[in-house]
Structures are given as structure tokens and as C-alpha cells.
Image: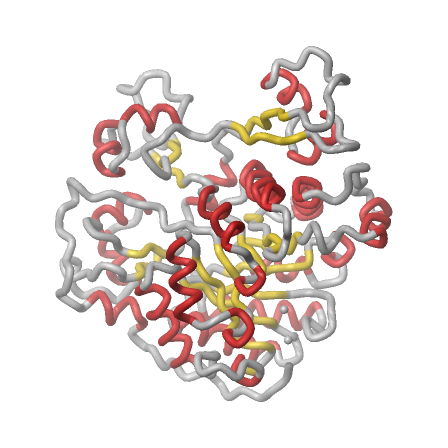
Length: 468
């Protein structure tokens, strides 16, 4: 996932932003706070490299909408827009094209994010260019930083300069840095600088591509011992988490879209969510089969969380979320008395009116034992033994199916990340009162931050940014 060029200082082409232009329309108003729900707009993502390689914008949008997925589109490489490399008509040639593509994808229900490859050769100009991509309509920015030809070749100082410039322009911008997830390649980039800059890290974890003798040797040499069953999705995720756990930010793994084994893709997603990743993504659209997209669609992102405020009740939240009281209680087993809630208490917001998934099936592979499986899934082997009522942990056989219990505890670091909810797309029945309550931010602050002049004139589909 690469080039040179010279770029002039940015002019703010969209002073009022897409949000403001949408919010001033009187079309499709929402006005009923009593019956509104707050659906999660969190979606798994597909990366798009070039339209000439991945497909037309129409094909991509419609298929992603079908499978309820978002897009991460490449905008530039170094200081060159993608039109330098992609001959298609819709290749990104500047902010105007990004703005056009943002409206195109968002209007079809596909959340629009962008990515680029910073080189570190001209860090200030590259940061300015990334800023323009965000201002033109991207929900968030992904940076692909790798130790390989055509990628990052700047110094650690250049990384800090890039980050300081970008953050000075947009302190509230959500930034995810995507990296080669192999531990030795993480050490080869200025990871400390990019982790400081970022809200999340997205390690690229390609279990089939990485399944070579050289990689197995290197994993073992770096203290990540590969089981005899080989490099599996759960092993590679556990290794990445172990390497990146020193950084107190979210981890959002990138999976191998060209992988042939659909069952392993399910394992990849479930293992990621079991490690408290909110979402996953796949590289890339042009190599990802519809079966994998279906697997992604069938495995919902990590639930959102809500902090109880004065005046809240489960009955009121049930009406507000459009979720039955029984489902809320099922997703929140810590509630012992539904009539006694504490201000500040944290609840999971169900992603639908259905019971919460509590485990995932795992088929025993040759060379595996319960201790290896527990290590790869990041849980205590005693939990697996107790959950499956296994009498003798030494008597498991290839082909046996066991259930891996998913983490049922409310993790404070996950709550902190979920509460960020950097942007929100207005749906029918929504209003600023709901957002104010969900984010614990005043309506006036939301209006000021998004340049909204009239709280009653908000158009469905408008993207609202959460104030700092």
C-alpha cells in the first residue's frame, strides 16, 4: 500500500464544511425526542487502493451498503494525489474530488474514511495535505506507515513534526495509524511518535501471507512462539496485542481480504473483538470475496456504552434506544435491580433487540492444546475448561469443537474509547437533544462546534462532530 511531489500551502476550500451546508436545509426534519433511537454507526471497513484496481465507485458503494460496511479510500501518497497513479476518472485529484466522493458514499449509507501514505520527506506539506482530505469530508484519517520501499523514509523527528502540524490544524481529528503487525517491523518505524499522534493503531495481520518459515523463525526469535499448528488468526492477533499493549490507545486489526479460509476470517473477527477491538477492516476491496464481506457483516462491532445520568431509567432508555428491557438486562448482567441505577454507572448499548453473544466456537486443529488456545485468545485456560465442562484437559482431539467465552466485563479503557464517538450521522427521529445526552455535552456546544445556526433544521444524513 506509494511517490513524490510538491504541494502548495492549503487554502480552506470548505470553510463551512459539509456538516454546515447540510444542517441549514429545512428538508427531512426530525423533531420527536420521545421516540428517537440512537443507532450505532460503528461499522467494519474495507480499504480501497485505486478505482482502476478495485472497481468503480458505484460497484464499491452498493456492495458495501449491502453488507453494512464502511470504506477507507486512498487519497494521496507523500505529496501526490492518487490521480498521479490511478488513471480512472474518479481517482482523487484534490479536495474537490474528495468532497464529491464523500457525499457519494455517505448518501448511500457507507461511512467515508480516507487513508494516505506519509513519507516523512516533507512532513509539514504532507500534514497539510492530510488536513485537506479531512476538511473535504472524511470522517477520520488513516495513515499507512510501514518499513518498506515506497513508504515511510523520514526520521523520528519528521514523524513528530508531521504529528504536531496535523494536530495543530485539527486537535479533534480521529487518526488511526496502520502498521505492519509483525513485531520486528513495528520496531523499524518511529512507532512511539505515531502512537502519540494517533487515537488507534491498526496492525496489518495477514496470517496466510505471513505463514512462511522465515516469519515463523522471526516470531520465535522475538519471543512469540508459533504453535505447531502454524500462524493462525488468533495467534497473530495475540502477538500484535502483546507487542502494542504499552500504548494506551485502541487496536483495530486489519485482516487479509485475499484469505481463502472463511472460517479463519470468522476467527480473526471474533478474536479481535474478544481482545476488545471495536472494529476490524480488510485489505482490500478488490481482493475480498463477498463471503468474507458477509462474515464481516454478520459479526457486529463491539457494543457502545452509555453512562447513566440523573433522571435516567431503564424504561426510558429502552424507549430511547428502541430495545426491549429484557434485552438491555441480558446485555448488562451486572444489573441486579432494574429500579436501582447509579449516576455514572456504565451500560452496554445492545446493537439490536437480541441476546448478547457470549462465546465463539473453535475447532481443535492439529498441534493445538488448551493452553495454546487460551494463550492465543488471551484468556485463562481455566475459563475454557470450566466453560466447556472439560474433565481432562489433556484429552481433546483434532476436530473437537469447544466454545471460547467472550469477555463479559465492562473494560474501562474500552468505555473511554467508545465514549469518543467522534462523528455521528443523523438518522430519522434523531435530534440534538439525543446527541447532547449521549455525549454528555450541551446542545449549545454541539451547535457551536458544528456551525449549526438552527437546532431544528437538521437534515437526515448530516454528519455531526463530537466536541472535545
